[in-house]
Image 1 (tube, rainbow, N blue to C red):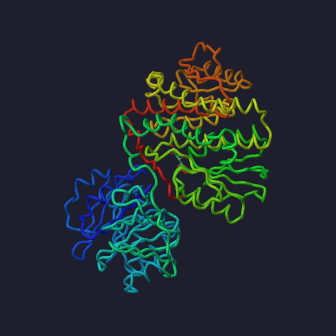
Image 2 (spheres, rainbow, N blue to C red):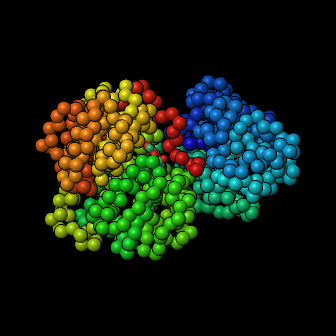
Length: 603
Ligand code: F6R
């Protein structure tokens, strides 16, 4: 989603720094890019459709300028064209913006009556015009920002230049993320701290309804009323070198391959001193009678796995909701409820809004978050960090397995706490957890995924089937395939297919199915036979080593028998690999799939 970077430096020519900052934000997903800088009391703007590399070709990297803002745009209002790309300018003002101005149509109409003419369909041009209108009215930029914040509804992180005010960047923030990097010779703004690491690891996090005035030697932060606020300076503690692909062709493959070692590290950490360290590190859930889990996309799928485990292992009622629905629905929560928010980025707008709604109800919240100090991580009552490291590929892989691992450990710890597992069962499950890294390494060494991909990559529709836990895992496999290979795919609970969707199964329709639950395997196998009878060609993932397949079964991936707590990893990692190999054969832009954004900061 849109990425913002801005630099104001004592002496450095800042165009290369802006371009480097934009490149660090590329992972967020975008379709056009642009920069604006101050030079000789004027603002120069250069924009282009496509990649930051396309923008780099048309900017002067040697330009004599020390203050500028830049942007990668993920289109919301108006197509992905260079005209609609940011920065936008009006009068003395130029801005870059991440978010959505919800009342932009109404503001635009009012400004048009005042004689303003708009060149684009974007809400950002309207925001810029409104700021310019107030600036012309008050002849004071701070008054303009305060008036803007009162009038504009929606979400916005804005970087602003004013041609009358040299060596200065203004930042305004409501709901969309924005940080201020504090360097020795320059200060910066960015959507994500990763964009400023070339200059500094020190940063401030702007809170909602704050704005800042940033010069090369000073950062001043104010609340909406114009009162100065003081802030704690943060230090980036992540791995600055995470962002190389090493020997891998794609970040996605690198991140898939990192999973065994991430799981290994997490398991060692939680079982450092056996069960006692697990119990000490995991929150006590004994008092809760009901759990809601809220997330989007892949994180939602991790939530479904947790639902299965909460219900099966703890007998605890658990509902999982998509955040964009949850934030608008009636909630049935009380003091015995816990709401769990799962998010890799910790910035997903819908998840954040749902969290704010629950906080207002004063119900307990727990976050399973990857990015430290992210908005959701800061707002939940309790946070458990997944230790996946930076995930650069847009399609989530290692963040998902890290989420599922922590949720599995959470349920396991609670099952022990509530006396639901005998000690020999506990030992067996711990042993199963500890086996995951080796089992995954073995699965990842196979070349079966390339063979399967050859049979799938030219297909138009692919179906995924499973029951109970397998269904939840196949949902993730189906999403992975869709997002990076652009092949239409649907996932169905195996027993549901015959209630309509089976009409889509015809000769050679590819189906991927998994069955890993002894009690349900026969049922799923019957459903597989039903699709084979209609011509489907099926790839199976199973831990039933006696299953030999038959007519219509094209591939079988055998996974080891293990506990329910562990099955998800062994099923989903092969599904990630199938999606990856299919997308590779289709020559798709695997790390940056079309239309997708890594951090979805608009509703
Ligand atoms: C898919 C994917 C998305 C995210 C979703 C939520 O591979 O990555 O579906 O899972 O946008 O993002 P977070 O976890 O950052 O809240």
